[in-house]
Amino acid sequence: MEKHIIIPDLGGAEGVTVIELLVKPGQTITPEMPLLTLEGDKATMEVPAPFGGTVQAIQIKVGDTV
Image 1 (cartoon, rainbow, N blue to C red):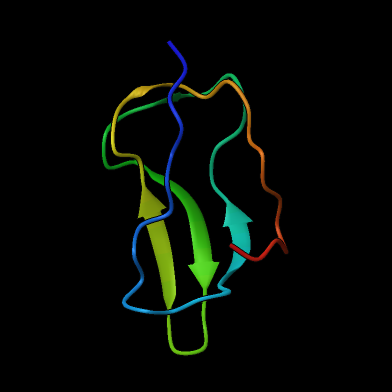
Image 2 (cartoon, one colour):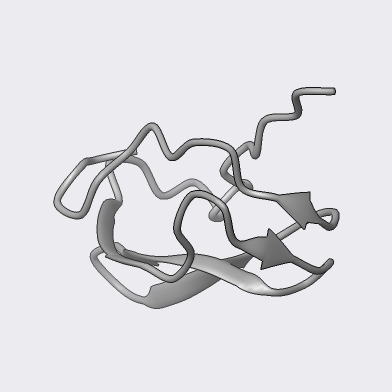
């Protein structure tokens, strides 16, 4: 069953940049495990996994704006 991770609301911040990917395809993840790091104008934030499973694909890359 395919699931997608949605970037959480960052308190009105728009256009944040992916600065680090912390997982890779094939990796098993657990709930709350950090997946990636985002950087905005005022803060840096790790995005946690909302559920566990195996990463099938990553559709973003470092430097992308989300």
